Image (cartoon, rainbow, N blue to C red; front, top):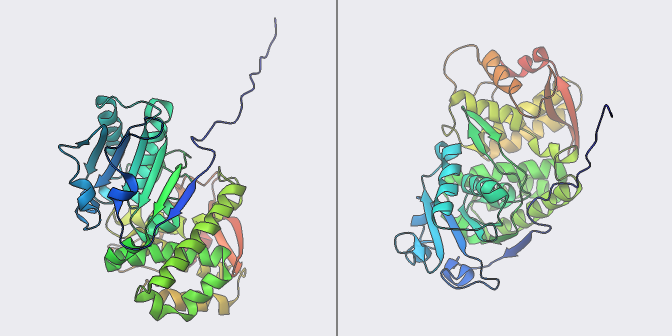
Length: 372
């Protein structure tokens, strides 16, 4: 009798072999783009998911009004609550339950219309539904366009920790309307800009130059600048994801600022600070730590902090939103729970200079220095 038996498996298929990104100019027209209620080429039905805020946007409202009690032809629409408090496993299960009750199959298409939360939970639900149904996105925030909708990370928060449950499951198609950015609140716009600046710091010197030298155009939401930001960020992330889909090496760079930022979000309560604001603060702490460890120069650190301040992000060691003492200890406790850690030290993305990034495990005492 053999003592061991081995079974070989092919790589798990992530739901699609290709993501097609379709850029749409002008005022978003979801009716003529998505044709709700019309039979699809291969007879698939669509299950649309959005939130209460997006559903009331002027470009989206005509689309929503085509659904009578959530149904238009054979297509369905589910409207969830808005924001980070709804990025939960309960919301994911609500999507799955509604699709099951409506008789959807694994060949039908889930379509998330919204920001990062809707894209993440709709993609997660699609990846679980009958072991995987196709998913498409219509990102309506800058953050979703430059980051959340691209590359296949799905998931939800759990027990007050960011993105603790999820899958790698990319969308088959993205419909990108840059004009949606003009309807965002100031804090939503700034949140998306943080992820775009992160991309520039990691991969794109020309985009970094835009943030450094054209701040007034960017802050005023100049349409041409927004188009450039979206396309350059999508191209940069596409290049990374094609090299490292499962986040084994270079894709980890995209977490720059996020280990600090996610810990801050958990500390102050998910939804009480914009994700981009937390990440921007985290990038500031990361460059300060990089300089403290003599990885980057003081000049580079100061320039990055100056750019962060120019766009209105906090760069102080302890953000104003934090209440109570012991901030460093509390934040580091949360940082240890980050899913990217594999040992006792905290794994951080740090920089030597613009577009030169490293991954290092840093002991707690070194991190404490930049949190006081």
